[in-house]
Figure 1 (cartoon, rainbow, N blue to C red):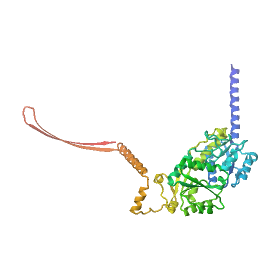
Figure 2 (cartoon, rainbow, N blue to C red; figure 1 turned 180 degrees about the vertical axis):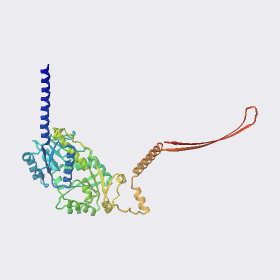
Figure 3 (cartoon, rainbow, N blue to C red; figure 1 turned 90 degrees about the vertical axis):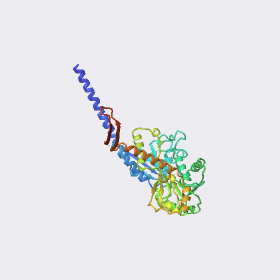
Figure 4 (cartoon, one colour; figure 1 turned 45 degrees about the horizontal axis):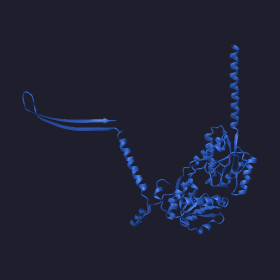
Length: 416
């Protein structure tokens, strides 16, 4: 009996020690630096901000289990050169061989997604219209390449179209597309035609090149310009483009978020909340490090876009912000003085406005008033009352005579 007991104790200690060593081995493996390779289409404006956001989120979420590294020698810039982007994609997978690869830009995403033998997991920054570009399957939104993943909101098309139709009553809109994107992706034109079919608005496409874009814009006549991301244009060129549109008194709507607004766009939809972006990609990285296959990581991610208007551009081109957006949009830039209107101008402005939103605001105010009244029932209260009564009846006793009696009652009550 004693021998069996000692054998059980030794067996238990052996299992405990083996588990301890296995834990130490796992901890050592987990603490090894995970090298992350990065491929940019080119030196686009917010890539550094996005990488910083991912790094901050990784530091918060990984709790020190992983030593994440972004070595400088495998952060590669394709400089908007297709051959260079493809060369760097091959180098990352065959020469540098990092643990995970991140891509920023349409062509960088395609360079890995199209690889038949992709052995390293790749996470691509969100790409607009990934189905049309052959990155995701049409109905399931599953990645075409099982070792590649991204983030996509399938409702973004409708969001963009809904904004366009409210920004201008015009039936004709010009889409400005950088030559780097449109010339290398003929399907983009088909995407624009799909927009035209859905909205009933006539879409025209103007493909611009960084070398002669100002001359191309000088002949432009349209009621609204839609500007996707200006791949291949530097910050100075982007500013000049929007300034030219202001000079031509043409409203511009961009997908470049706050960057486009800072450069002079009239209005932008911003899908990129920096912290949400960083957390989304950090979670994908950690899922892969935990052994999850990229094809099993959910791609669908509903982006919450905010609308931003540039106050200065609004004033320069004389644009009236639709009342539907006046309360919900972010206004960028310095406040301007209210425009003085004559009675006739005020009437004309009022007739062109949609007052449904004002009626809704009135209903909300009335509801809030009802809430305040209800809340007052729970406040401390002092109630007082004064009661007066007089009795003037014949007495029914031995000495019959009228009974006159006057009574006053005063009540004071405090309710907590």
